[in-house]
Length: 571
Image (cartoon, rainbow, N blue to C red):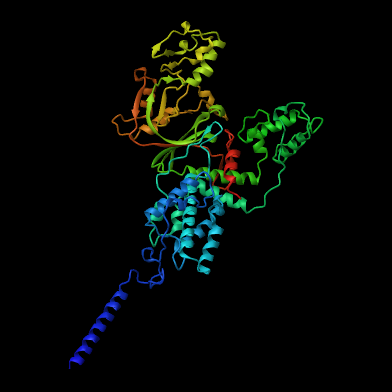
């Protein structure tokens, strides 16, 4: 009987053990311990067979990043991602590549349509090594290493979409300041849900504007067409292009102009510059928005040599510029396109107002940057920059032998905070340039800033303003200022900015003009309650609704330099 009871007890213990083991099997850490897909065949990241990643800083120092400008930053971001992700793989699991790896590879496949190169992000190489890793059942440590390489590729791609591929802050004397991207690209991966579409997330980083879409469509069209074989016109020294100059290239120029509809019958020799050729060249220049001076400047030669390949390059370049300045401007914003010489005011992406502007000369160019309008000042003074005092005003006083030249025009001169008499200064003394003079122009309709200025928040002393030189707006080429942006109709711009301010003043255009012309309103500032962002841009091509491209003047000669900068990613 005791023997039977012992058998029963043993049987019960075995049954309990089997039951416990059975319960343990029905409550595993994942519902599919040998697969990264659940019973429904769906991938759930928190349950997938992820692989531990070495998060030591040194393990990220040799990651491949095919952009020297961002290499260190991308390696650091990749390290941050895995540190915050718990040190586990995101793209590759023990048994299979993840769903988002396939989506990423597919997304890279199409980026050539945006002028980007998939191999900058190692699309072919990554796909090949990942396929091999699973085909030949390579170790998990190797897959973890590949996972880091994929993350570095992804973060570089996201960086290029949000910050562009330009490597410089300035090209020659021309300042190019990228907007600061507000978000961390690693957050896109950290917060990617199981049902999220990575391709759609990446697509959201591209510009949404109609102009970008048109440029892209035109770029695809030209990319799929055979390139034309136009002969490039080159002169060793274009300054020699004057009446009577003879060169075989002159005949090539005649032929090129004739093909564009600007024929000229040579008076004697087709290889000689004569009045008929000069006249044809002037007509060509006028039709292309260039100064019709009959000389062969850089802009004229660029237009003469324009072909499909060049158009395609300009589309690719300007799509890049649009991606760089794809910043959120809010509901109310201003766009100034320097090569267009125009200002556009928008509310919720609808054009409210536009006007002509004057921008900086090539020697004192207007910076390309983003900012916001701080306030409007009626009847401003002008504190002259030191560079203008030393390089222009003092030399003019010497040339005219008139120390009171600027005093008589409404300027007060200061040194060490005290008013000085210009007659008591020896302006011919070479040491005068080492003294810190300050010239301040009093408010008046003759003031260099006109009767109103629009203050921005930058530290470069760049702002928008009125001007007494209204005749300049009649010129086609309006790169004429020291860097600030002169507005043709500032009273109308001020009215549009102030009319909805709700400050109790009920602004009308008449009231704006009254403030501009009333000398009791000297240096009267109105702080704006509405935030107006402003992008000062540099776009040298546009595409209209019919798909026709219009080339703008590259007034700062930036196109070739920036094209060279991004073409390093072609190979």
